Amino acid sequence: MKTKLISLFAAAVICLGADCAMAAHVGLSSATSADATVYAKAVSVTPEEAEHGPSQKPVEIARMFGFPITNSMVFSWIVAVGLIVFAQVATRQMKPVPDGAQNFWEWLVEGLYMFLEDIIGSHLVERTFWFFASVFIFILTANWLGLIPGVGTIGWGHQSAHGFRIDQPVFRGANADVNLTLAMALIFFACWLIWALQEDGPVGFLKELFAPKGETDGLMKVVMVIVFFASGCLEIVSILFRPISLSFRLYGNVFAGENMLDAMSTMVPRLGWLLPIPFYFMELLVGVVQALVFMLLTAVFTLLICQRDEEPTAAQS
Image (cartoon, rainbow, N blue to C red):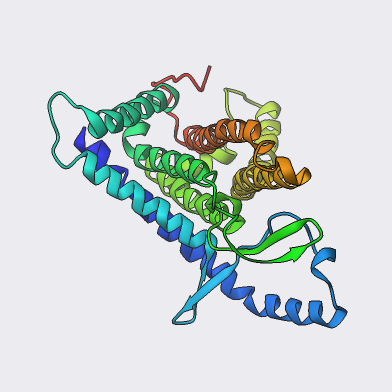
């Protein structure tokens, strides 16, 4: 059990790896952002004419050794460190009869393990559980902590006709930044490729994509070879688009939630503290659903390429 708990420390690896991809994206786009700033000044865009609501791009709040630090990166680091500290505290003194933090942590990990085992099978879950559980817990924690008052609402801004607007928040929801969601999807794509080659081998991997299924002979066999080869080519295109669909699905839902809460808080200034409350409860549900969807899709994608005929699972039915 302790091995399963310690494996969740990989959340830090996922977070740090995602930040590297995120920083690379920000670094490549820094020159473009500077040019855009000069252009904005040239055309004299006023704050009132600017886009309302949270910005789609993260705000660079610092630069260390030429490495850009954005508000979403800082928030993702806080989430990762918080998970590591909590897991260390919960597993520091393991008891035969767990209580407190250890009881909660074991309940969460055991629940996820059994849930995934029913979907992808016992063999595959032993190899991949560290990733699926870590990414679920990280996404869920980041989504819920992003709803804390102050995230996205404390920072620097300006006075407008609609009240004081925050232009540069100190913190921003981690999954409301497409760089982080894309990085997590790319990390999964790399893991998916490694798991597929380990389970099937290079030849088996190609057979899984292009080889015809079923027993045929004669002219029908030639037709089936052509059909399954064309189907394999389409499958490769689908596989290459999976990181994009995974990242934009998570980013779009979280960013849309931020915009909805911002719109509700500014729609009626005197009721800005009351109107968003019902939507906060909805966003709590959305946070769970999106974490579950990301984990389930990645798990099913892995099962489809690594499944064993002798071990039927719930996902096959």
